[in-house]
Length: 157
Image (cartoon, rainbow, N blue to C red; front, side):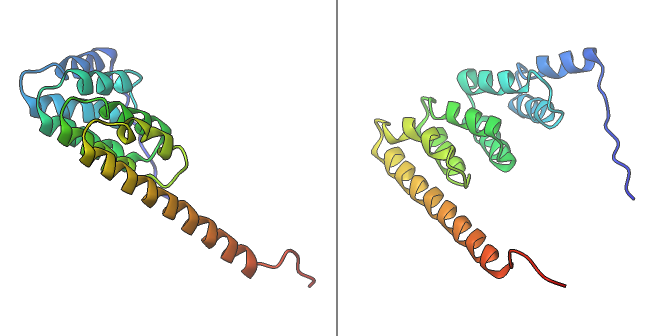
C-alpha cells in the first residue's frame, strides 16, 4: 500500500506565501496563490477573492479561474462566481465557461449575475452554460436510472 505524506508548513512559511500574493511579478502572485490553494490554507479563499478584486493582470485571473475549475467544489464555485463581478469582459467570459463545466444544480444560480450582465456575449455564454449544466444533470440522472434498472432489488441464493 502507498503511504501518503502530508507536509506541514510552518506559520512563517505560510505568512511568506500569503505575502507573495502581493508580489510585483504576476507569475509569483499566481504561483503563491496556487500553492496556498493546494495546501488548503485557511486564507486561500480570501486571498483568491482579493486577487479577483485587485489583480490588474488578466492572465493571472484566467489562471486562477482554470485552477478553480479543476476543483469542482462548492468553495471553488463560490470563488468563480466572484470572478463574474470583474470589470474585464474576458475574465467574466472565462468564469462563465468554467462554471459551465460544473455538473450540479448549485452552478445554475451561480450564473445569475452573468445572465444579467450588461455585455450580451456574457449573457449568451451564460445561457449556453446553464443549458450545458442542465443537460449534464439530466444525463447523469438517466445514467443512474439505467444502473438501477440493471440491479435487482434482492437476490435469492
